[in-house]
Image 1: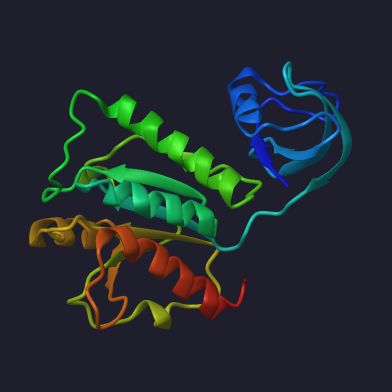
Image 2 (image 1 turned 60 degrees about the horizontal axis):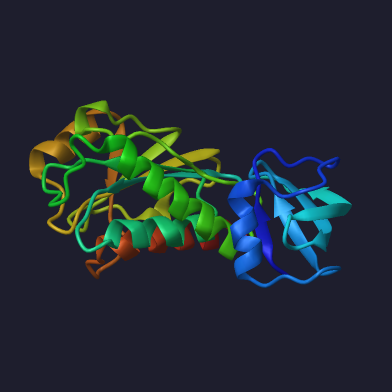
Length: 230
């Protein structure tokens, strides 16, 4: 069943918002076909399409989903070759709560002068990944930050292959976790020291050194598996 996102959708809505109408038409949805619509805040509506051309529909039923605990926040360094966007997409599919773009010292990509444009692009990718994976919560893409402004939400770890402790040794009783992933060139020593000083703990993911596109999703998968919340 096709999945749509409309932040203003309610149980009394009779049509999809204009932003999703084109998506509806692209999928060639037919009259009387059923779809699901989420408001991105946990509410899901089962709907019957009455008129695919105008987006007219009727709500058949609704349900509310609960957020995953712990809440995972991803701090993803900007990276070349859309590898940062690949990480963003996969983490949304896994149920990340929020994403913060990070202008790291060794990031080849630079958003200077186009910070909001970059953030909006990431938010659109998050919306697409949320719909594709049929999630009911849309993660917030926060404004891009520099290293000195980074603080953890809840428990904070920075992935570092040189670290001794592993992410598999995290405690089991935290409600929020912030994961910092560096760019392809790694995290500069001075930046790592700043992050540790801000409350992050360096942790290794394993013996392999993963690309920035796979490190965040791999860390999330390992943590969710350890906590048995899948």
